[in-house]
Length: 193
Length: 260
Image 1 (spheres, rainbow over the protein chains, first blue to last red):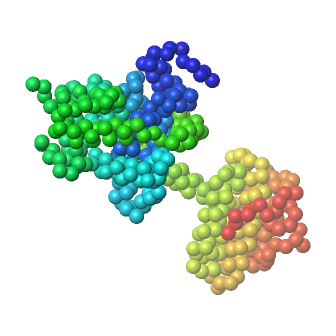
Image 2 (spheres, rainbow over the protein chains, first blue to last red; image 1 turned 180 degrees about the vertical axis):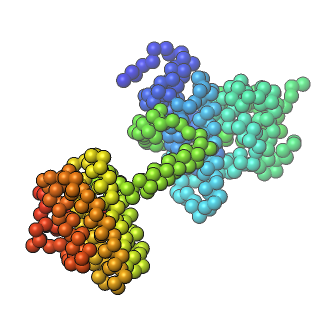
């Protein structure tokens, strides 16, 4: 089993990992998982607002990605992340639809946020709920911009490429998105102030 | 003067990089607060145990689920019903072919059991003993005609003669049983068919094509048919010289397991 890749250039590594993952090389897919799961998890957590649910969805996303990697044609990290986020978005929407149809199937009230202090965990959970609810009120582009910039930590250029928009549009979108979120999350704030 | 979006971007870049944010513009404070919170969400990690469990699951997922190249051609969604319809039509065609071919199937054909089953169903559906008697007699007559034709073409597969003759005997016997319970009209009709069967078998015997087991079976069947025709047919038993349930030619006398 090869444990080291010949070229340590990150871009080349991605190309090779992706090529090998497409040929069902589990080691290569595990490498891709290791370098991407945090960002995908952040996206999921921001969307669903529940740590345990985000973990469940994380698993769903990567299993779905493993099943579909053969059909993925991208060759760069950005393309791969973008593809994973599309899968993640679909999984989130599935979850929302299920919750809408079966509101009785609520997840456990026990906080599972990975925080040691239960009170901190409850605070964090409440805040996560509020953030995910607020994100749900944005337009899709606005939501994607703030998720890409702040949750995933991408820079302007990366976000611009991922979303297929120019940098100016990204700046305008993130300004509007944050103003909207501030209005929702901070009582007394005027969006147009 | 810098646009508000550019100013915000400066601070956001600091938040993303983890640098301390010193915003003098109080109007931006709520937005930067939200941005900081979102950045914190991005820093929350899944539990290490869960990360490892997913990694293990990814290794364990079977290849089929993992989307390995299938040996089957991939069909688009719209093609699946078409393929299903084609398959159903193929099955129907096969079923129709079988159903059409079964009535004349010979004992060495895989469709012969279908023929027997089909006859059994026809008998079950018949309303009166007279109808059942005539059906049995006709089934026997069809076999006799087939045997006559096979002998004429000198194209008889091993085992076919014995099975056909036994099935003729059993059907003639059943025809007589059913006719016995009905009136003289039924007995007359069956007797008429038995006469035809007897003629066919007589001709075969005169041609002298059969010897050994086949010849003995032919003689036995002919006698059963003629005795039935004369109203003496009774259930063939082991005490008789030979018959459907007696030893004959070293073969299993009860070969017609699907008989009606």
